[in-house]
Amino acid sequence: MFSTDNLFFLILFIVPGTVLLLFNRFLKPVPIAEKDETIRIAGALLFSFIVFGINSFVFSKDYKLFSAQDTIFADTTLLLKIVIVNVAVSFILSIVWAGFTKHLLHRINNMVNKVMNKPETTRNSTVWRDIFTDNFLGDTLDNCVIKVEQNGLISTGVLYSYSSPTSEKIEIILAYKTEIDEYFKFDAKQTDVSKKYFSVVLYEYIDLTNNFKITFYDMTKYRNNIKDAQGNKE
Image 1 (cartoon, one colour):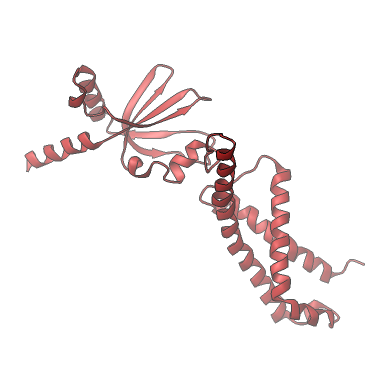
Image 2 (cartoon, rainbow, N blue to C red; image 1 turned 30 degrees about the vertical axis):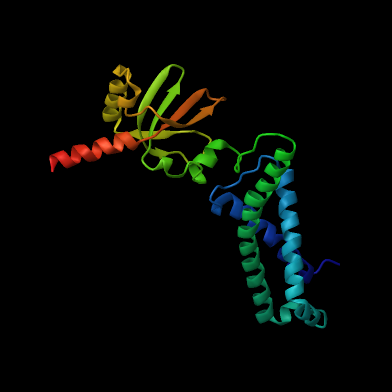
């Protein structure tokens, strides 16, 4: 017969997987919204088994006390402690689990790729997420000058803001467009590469699906020119 005690332990078992799903969806730096429900549920069940095993070990003596009682609800203080510990362990392990799946599994995967002479894969599900969440380009994103090209249209400026890596849309905001456009017009007239402000390309991000390219430029000459101009004003 299914009793309230059994219901309580069933809920206790489900809680860790639920905490993991909520953490991945809302609290993780790069939230996860798996399209495959089977993978998502399987991962949550495995996580619940791990947490349940830890809690069973921690509360092994207390569970024996429960078995000697008519109902587990006889000791509400102990019951509350188990619930709090279960949620706390679930949340802490969610953080550890996120680091494990993101870093360790990524390294293992690339080690296998290296043995099989395959190129390395990105840490996240997309290169866009690698660039804008994992500091993949280092200081390059620090007020960097970029050029965006799509279907013959070209736009240049300082990267001011960009859409969340979890967003379905890829959007960016460019600042100081007029000023940066003038620099690129100046560079276009120069035959001597050494006189150009943006002659060194650091990285290029190419989206083959949406057919656009983002070029990240070295800003050393540009920044030096800004400093010189400010110094002359003073």
